[in-house]
Length: 215
Image 1 (spheres, rainbow, N blue to C red):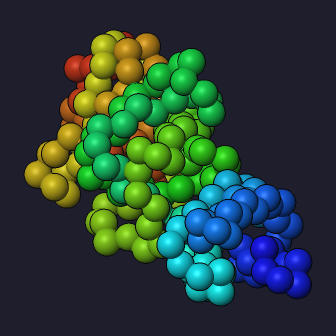
Image 2 (image 1 turned 180 degrees about the vertical axis):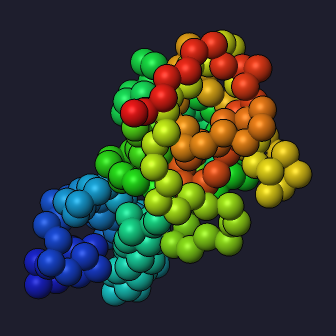
């Protein structure tokens, strides 16, 4: 907090409610500020300084808070993400029901952004991936996106089924877990074509145990 009682961190989050607590030991030149930022995706920020003057510490805290806010807002407004490693796809925003896997370095379209989870098109609706497992992106440079394809029917997995991307020579981009059901929009020879996170994916018919067609 500066000398007129205003939160230094708070100045970096204009129009957003900020609850904060400062801590100071002037004789040791220690000036800290911790805050909860109540925007659409709330977060906690703690900045600690030592060995610099009070005036400089306020500049450092304000500058760092502004940088954090800029990156936070970019992540909150992201339209896509890129997986940092193989990540689990869950049926809901918890870790109780895994329905598939996304492989490393895959870019998918975000359909929902809630708390610590991103939602993607998967299965019969939405699958969820933890934000900490991926890198948020404003733009994408990925080919093979789905555009307004109708649901033709539904397939059910006989076993864990790989999803391949034919635009990258059949590279595996993810897996659908055993017994999971999944909408498809067409069939090409021995493959069912699906939407995985806004991208076109192919599942071989040998992995399918049941098929129903939309009438």
